[in-house]
Length: 507
Image 1 (cartoon, rainbow, N blue to C red):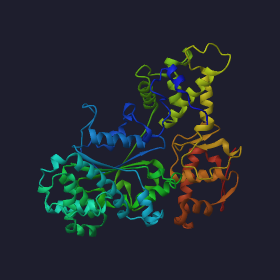
Image 2: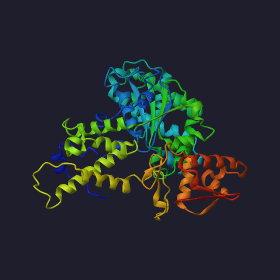
Image 3: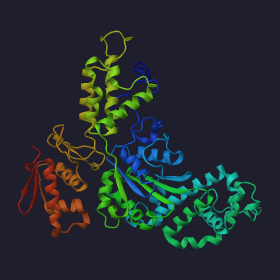
Image 4: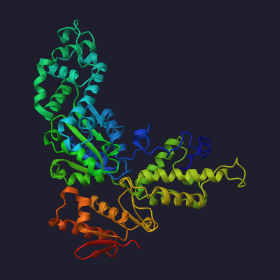
């Protein structure tokens, strides 16, 4: 891995705020709002156009900003629109209880990573542990308001039940000096103790299943002053055992999304942030039926948006001194932003990787002995840009987040072919597909690339791709998938061996 540009060199270029391209993970971005590009899908997932919050899914190709959108949805829900003239209606009334459901360690432990055993209750259990922690914090911060609210005995009992069963801090609390009524509670600690004292009266809500528990939690959150509860589900594809298996991510979410009551509960809204590949597998599961149960939106970047992202990054890290790399390039690179934007297949993460390579190559050139006075102002030249583009094409663009653990075979023949992170197909370095691959097409082509020139039997392909669902009499499904794949990569690439299978022609 090449060394990152030094702070000294970055400052010479004008980046007083550090490396504008070093972070490619939204979770590690401290000032994301400064360079967030709000594409149409962002407003749709916020329900700004409808004015009526609903559970929905935001899909994106890998590296196209699903987690960045999740973080900004969270910020908007908590703070409201930064710009009062923002597009559409503001559908959310403050305060909103936002529960980021991004940690699945408790869920995994509950079934020992056997996700076929998952039920909605397992998800609700994890969500409640996160939600109760937020509820406790809310009570502590707003105690002076809450102490004057009139809460019914049933609300107190349910609050106590959740504090006792879903909080390590308050579970099992038993103080003989606990006041018997909320009116006598002098602080939030005594309030929690009073609630837990009444918790036994609410034990019956545990018999209501996942929907009963989450309904009860939502109602007590509203009783405390929240206007709505929103669960933001993100990162299910980034667990160590799901990173290369979108079908496994879909299996994890299946019991949650298929629970219609949870997706349509008053006061409670789910927002899922998922890779398109995971959504593709969810659409194949009869129990989820996304089109009927929950609407999905897609983040779609174009070159104009990519250039805007580049400009915002430059401004944020240079204290508004720079907004175009052409400002620190030689005169023959006036269109450098266009070159970068057109080279990354509308993928913002790839833009950051390519732009960082430009800075790395620029520093290498700057430090090369014999080039000239080191006090000169560094500049990006045509040769620097060409070196960065070559490095990107060879080392960055071929990486596929959903490649198998072993990956395609690394022989010279197979390396002429690759599948990009956006699920397009490249041959000899050039993208040859206008449409991206769907999940099954991806799996079949990957299988071909792993065994170039070999004859693959139909049943072998079917079992590898459709697993236990494969039955020979449904071979027409394979026929249709091969037909679509041929349309995208060229009919001559896949040779039919009549009555047996197929051979992939790599030349």
